[in-house]
Amino acid sequence: LNDGNEMPAIALGTWLGMNSTFGRAPLKSDEVEQAVKWALNAGYRHIDTAWIYKVEDQVGRGLKGSEVKREDIFVTTKLWNDRHARDAVVPALRESLKNLQLDYVDLYLIHWPCGQFFNGTYDTTDYLDTWRGMMEAKKLGLTKSIGLSNFNQGQIQRILDQGLEKPAALQVEINLNLQQPELLAFCKSQNIVVQ
Image (cartoon, rainbow, N blue to C red):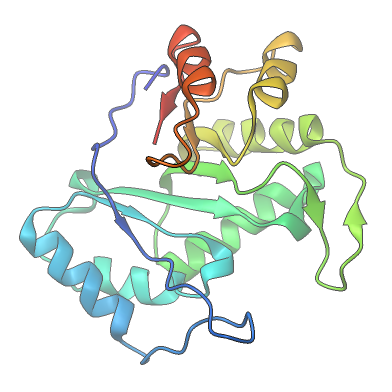
């Protein structure tokens, strides 16, 4: 990463999808915990989760139940949309850390560029303020690296134009039907890892 930290290229994602009513897919109380243990035993060293997935506690139990040392595991989690206020970022990460039973994560991402509360109203917080909260979380040692998820080139450029810390990573959907070559080229030119 551009901040000197290293991130394994392949990760176990813990998003379980949604059911037909757009609720979280049902799962057993140890389903993700077991998946994390199996993945680590199989050689995975990067676990990706998010507060909104509602499985951080299982990820934490899986990490604790593994024989792999914490310093050998790269953990990513994400800030949810209802916590975009600058002063909400650190408490949100502390909650995730408690769920994960960790002292720090390796990468903390803003999940989406726009804030939205659970009642459906949009948060008017500028994501530049959210980013400043992310920088504070890093300064406190709660995360080693900070990055973005689902941001476009213009939104990233706006952060860069402010002279703020450069995002270390961008997590976006890329596949055969959504290749995003311009975004990839832009991130490469800015030394931002795309995952």
